Length: 314
Image 1 (cartoon, helix red, strand yellow):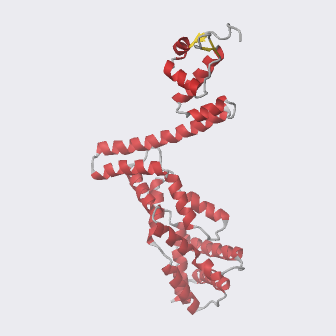
Image 2 (tube, helix red, strand yellow):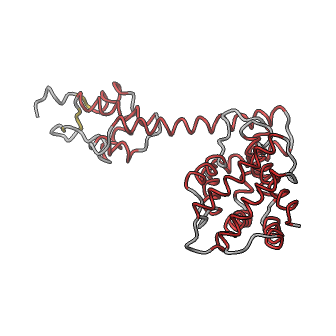
Image 3 (tube, rainbow, N blue to C red):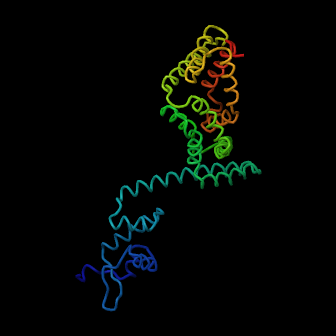
């Protein structure tokens, strides 16, 4: 190699790059910045290209990129643009996390109490456990084996996995902590799954799931319209909606619709009602900042239950 190309001793390289000599030696020893040449006395020598490489390494280390990733990039096993994009996403996640922690600490400073200290410690624990993954695991367990329509399942999962705002209020933080406790409760996940799958277990294989979904949706549409119009469940509208819903359940289970079947169906609905589920959705509403749960579907179903009861269920 020509002398003009290898012109920086390690001390000069350290001055130009701002990287300590000890660090440059370490980078050389681990293969990130091998010297381009050596003198007869074995002193390291570096080129302009080595200086540029070292400056890139320094910049990436200042962004907390690990050395193995840097080595892969410099060995042309990684694309610089993709690496920086991935790292930008990581930094954005970290910034959101720090903002949430700052909101918690500010709340603790404004009103120091055991409750605010609990928020600080609990949020730090949940950051480490990955809050989103916690909720996703809950929905994985709660829907395992439940033959939901994929679009319906996706809507439930998206709605039930709220993001804590970057600058949350103390109420949103408390709601998230309670939601996380519910999501981590194995009994609640098992109960949610049992409440969703009991009908499918009774129906067995080979029945028309699509037809049942369509009938159930039609009954809910009729009930929602009646609720919006302020109509009572014991009128003709209730009789129609009850016939659609109870008839769909009876057909799928191979039973005959009638007073006895409707009484049995009401018992099943009551047995598979869990107050914790409504609490879950109330907490989701608080985290999203809406303050109260949108009870549209819940009110429609309660109206339907009333219609079945008024038209021969009990």
